[in-house]
Every structure is written in C-alpha cells, then in structure tokens.
Length: 140
Image (tube, rainbow, N blue to C red; front, side, top):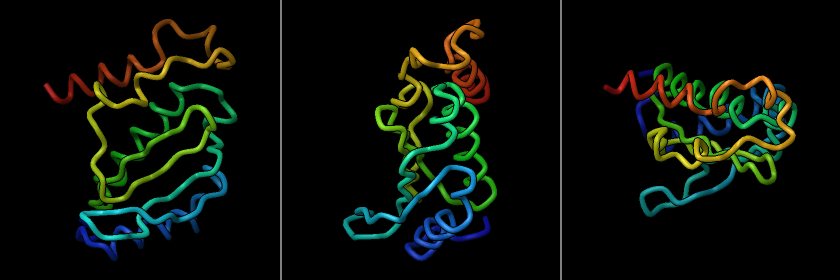
C-alpha cells in the first residue's frame, strides 16, 4: 500500500488525477462529496470521457477503462476507487475511497450497447459478458 487510507490520501489522489490524466480521459475537475459524514474533495468529475466518446462502446468503457483502473489503483496505491460512468452524457466520476460494487450488481455492467457502437457488428456476445465471466471465475 503506497498511501494509507485517509482524507489527505483521497484528496491527493483526486488532485493527482486531474493534473496527470486529462490527456487520457479529457478535461476533469475535483468535486466535493460527503465521506463518512464529512465533506471531502475526493471525487474527480470527467466532463466527457474520451474513451467513451471516441468508441461509443459501453464494453470498451467498462472492460478497458473502469475495471482495470479500479483494480490498478487499488492494487498499486492501496486506494479503493469506484468509477461511475454516465452513459447518457458520457461523463464519469471517480470516487476515491469508495469500494466499487461487484460486477454482477454494478449498474455500469447492466448498460446495453449503444446503437452507434463502432464495434457493435463485431461483438460475438454482450459487451460486458467477458469481464463478468472473468471476475466471477476469480471470485469463485
């Protein structure tokens, strides 16, 4: 664990993300939220995610960004993070210090493919089915 879980660590991760990740995900800003009854600046709001906007693919968002990022940040920094994509406006929030729900109950994995998905015709199965199967096998 690189950073012990604390208000300072959660806010540091949020600020770090807004400084070093815009080239990858697009413009983002730190937002305030309530954490254990107190206000913290631990949320990164990505105004329009480049991954989602460029691909128009729910599966690319969940399988190539959301899940790997959550796992990497937790395993590398020791910081839990829940990435909450908004498939209507293509924004996303990264909530530092919040454990993500399991893939089988995560609303992001319940989202159907976009009609304009650039990979829609190449899918052999549901976009999100492969990540769910992989996680289920690791949990079992």
